Length: 218
Image 1 (cartoon, rainbow, N blue to C red):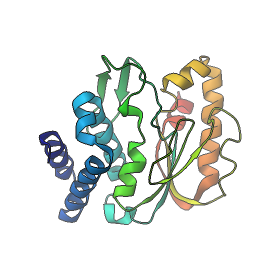
Image 2: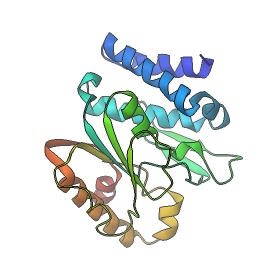
Image 3: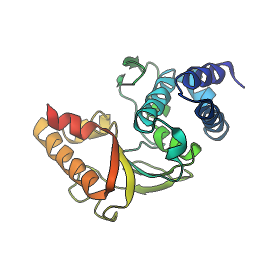
């Protein structure tokens, strides 16, 4: 196993509360490397490591016992894709600490905006569903393509059909900010995303993370 993957695996295992969760996260990181070339992407773009830490941290905050994540139908709104473009700077808010990650020398495509949350969830035996405007063909989880800046973009998903949901990184993506430079438009989209999350969650369902909610609180 690559030393960077070993270091990442040890770090994340050290954040787990039980031996079983340590084993689960170690296996998940190994699966991400085998399936998606995680080590090579971290070597090329160190910020990928921070993104993985961020996504794992959100899951451990929402599911103190990772075994309860198994079988959960989890919606990731703006999940990322294989065609996402790189901004010059990425701010990563993680339960393990916030990081400002520069993206030097990366033109166009970046692995930092790949659908890591859904991939991690799948490796932990959840049933993730990703929605994004970018390309998701070839991913092993259920996914759909939609323009999330449009009202009703998620209407095709059934009411109360998810155990958990999150929206992440839509409002900071370069494509979105270029499409909606005005704050009033961003707030309008945030309200629609928040409405959809409330509609789509089962009774007792959880919001793992919501950039939309944070934007509406400003």
